[in-house]
Structures are given as structure tokens and as C-alpha cells.
Length: 272
Ligand code: 4AZ
Image (tube, rainbow, N blue to C red):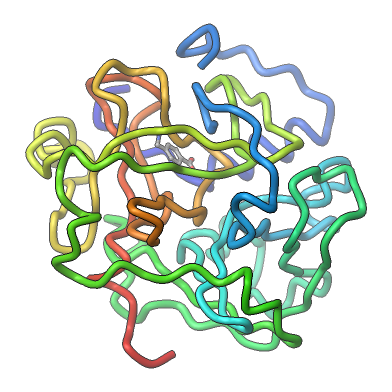
């Protein structure tokens, strides 16, 4: 599987399979492998994390969650562009009638927080679905979330992007690598890795190459802690600021295959 690209396309298919009651047969990558290797987190500790939801498309058991997102202004949520792709949504975002952002809720089976409808979607025009470069989209919410939910974005050159910086990734994705989706929010501690770690893992050729201009490399040098399917679009936070969005990688939690994130400072427009 080396170099093979996995992302929310397969995540979405996994969710559909799970909704249909099918049993996953893949071998877990690690025994306790957010988010693989993670822990549960209260929404009050990470109020900027939101779930993207469509119960019509993904089923109601986990409130229709299919990707993550992050609140960067009261009416603006960042997510991965690939989360809004036709392969994931089955059509254009505005055709998904019950598309909502779920904010202020860690437990997908609970009633906490709020569900907010979307008035506009903006997909980075430089997003390349073949290479996943520039994997960022902006959702505009119909009604504002509290200012206290907003997280700041680390500007280009900020110390938060330095290799070795501790970073936390958040999501409701696969906790094992075999299709076991979380129903409560989880987080895993990883670190920003040098671009060379992802250039080595993803040199291109057969697979998709890592691009340091639009992507950010992060993971656990020991393996075990990582983002996984269903976490796409969710935040990577370092020094209290947003640095990345979960984008892609080969497998989950393997030391030699770090997670690849959208480098938010490089891709986020100054106006959206
Ligand atoms: C996914 O499918 C996905 N381990 C996200 C992150 C990673 C792999 C897959 C990185 O959404």
C-alpha cells in the first residue's frame, strides 16, 4: 500500500458500509491505535472543532458526520476541499439538502450544541483533486457561532510550523484503521515533522507526491498516533493556533507514513 492515497473518498465509503452494517475485514494498524492513538476530549476544550453532517447521505447513527471542520470566524468554517467532492457528497454541496455543521457537540449521539445550515461554499480554485494540493474549502454559516468558538490561524513563518513543535489533531474518524468510527470527539498528540519526512514517504512516481508549498507533514515518529479516515478537514493545532487541516496519508499511525495536512497559511485566502 506504500504511497497509495487514502482520503475521505474511502472514508465516506467506509461510513456507508458501516451504516449498511457490513463488517470491516482489514487488520488494525495498531492495537490502541484518533484519530488513532488518541484520547477523548471535551468540546469546551476545543470549541473550534465542528462536524460536517448529512444524515441523508451518511446515516443517522453518528449524526451524519463525514468530515471535520474548524471555526475561524463566527460564520466561517474551514474544511478540506475533498470533503465537498462529488465522490463524497454524491453531488454539489448545495444539492445536499440536509448539509449542516454541528458545533458545540462532542458526542454525536447527544443533543448538545447546535446544528447550523450553510449559506455558501467556497472551494479553493487552486485545489487539485488528483494530487490533493491546496485541499481547503470555506463554508459560510447561515447564523453565527459564538466568538468564543473561534481559533486563530498561524501566519506563514510562525514558530508553530517549526519541525518538532507539538501539535494536536482532532476528529471523529477511524480509531483503529479498520473502520471503527468514533462517536465522541478525540484528539491525538503528534508533532510537526520536517518536510523531508513526508518527501521520503511520498516521493511521487506511482503515488501522489508531498508538496511542501501547500502541505504540512505531521505525525508520531514512533508511530501509533495519527489522523485517519473520517478526520479529514479537521484541525491540527500547534501553540494554540491552527496550522493544518487533515488531508491525506498512506494508512494511519505508521511511523514511516506521516499524516499530510493542508498548510493553512499557504492556502487560506486573505479574503473569503
Ligand atoms: C482520510 O481518509 C485520511 N493518516 C485522513 C488522514 C490520513 C489518512 C487518511 C492520515 O480521510
